[in-house]
Length: 479
Image 1 (cartoon, helix red, strand yellow):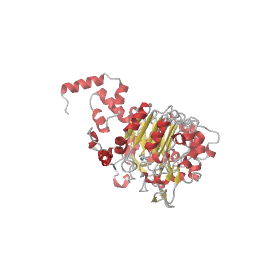
Image 2 (spheres, rainbow, N blue to C red):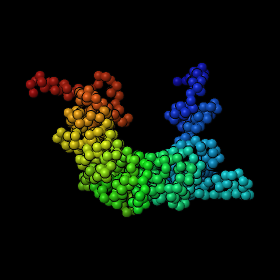
Image 3 (spheres, rainbow, N blue to C red):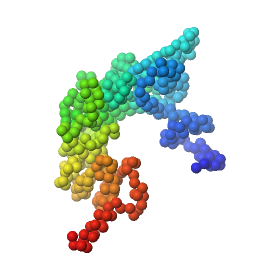
Image 4 (cartoon, helix red, strand yellow):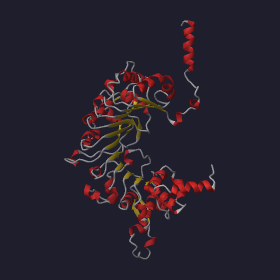
């Protein structure tokens, strides 16, 4: 649709009358390309669009590229961003979120980064091919971003082709960024970390001072990241309220393995923890850290109670718990994991989001007892790729509404390639959902975009009409 000049003027006038903060919230939903175009329009809207562009900066992962040999006159995206932030401190002040995947390899930088004060540059210095590691460039940028609140950091070894391998994530992020290990106080002296609230870090080791940043309340840790040992924080606590971690499925059959034994002591250092998110990756590696495929299988089963053991000590404080398979893994391995029998002990839990197999096994034929499976104070229950016997669980919840007095919402997230389809739940069991809603519990069913069927837009469509006809015919024939 093409807007007339009158309508364009009207829209522009309406936008001009909006408060700047509201304009920024609107701009947040616009694609980067549109924001770039807006930044070239009127002075006011242009400044808003430019601020929106710089509020959240993302440099996605790229395999390492040797700029010095292949394109000696070009700067990497990391080096270009650093140069812009140094030359435009007004833009650096606008940055609130930063996502970077720096390599530990060297890349060319503009000599101006080493001489930003405007002093006279020695003759010939401009022609020097100055190199700096990308990780060091990020450390340099963090000293310019005094209003940064969210940081997504993955320290990479660019020589490893497969970014999923453990050795592609490098050691201690702090040392790569700043040249040495820092204490909490030293980290707080870096402007870009002083006001940090959210940190997602992917390296092979997590240093404890990161967790102790004064305003940090949300921490996410990658799958190959070793947690700090108890000797690093003997008496120290942190302010983290939301903790997200990716773990290999070895935790489901060997919870005391060295890579998992640190989890419970680490969580004890978070007295304010209310939200815990655990993603599971079912991949194993050999000694050369090559991807060998799935870990759990028919011959190597697992147990969700092995994972819940790490969480039970915090059953009186955690309000939100999410246990899911990681998106890059196919969920079939969950068929080889026994459901949990101890979730009901998490008495403070208000929101539970899990893969179906955490609650039930698809082979179960007996009616599940919801009171033994679900925490009593649950308010929201979200189940991913459910199977047919989840309907039996809904029936039992309906029969025990007095036990689940706070339960308000149940959400089922279906997928056609695992569990039962959206059609199965939406068209077959409407009466159950209506009875639950009459009891004050809303049921919502979702499908993936790739599973969408145009027939669903037809109000008369019923994929199970054949079963109904067959049933009625059986009545008339006496079968």
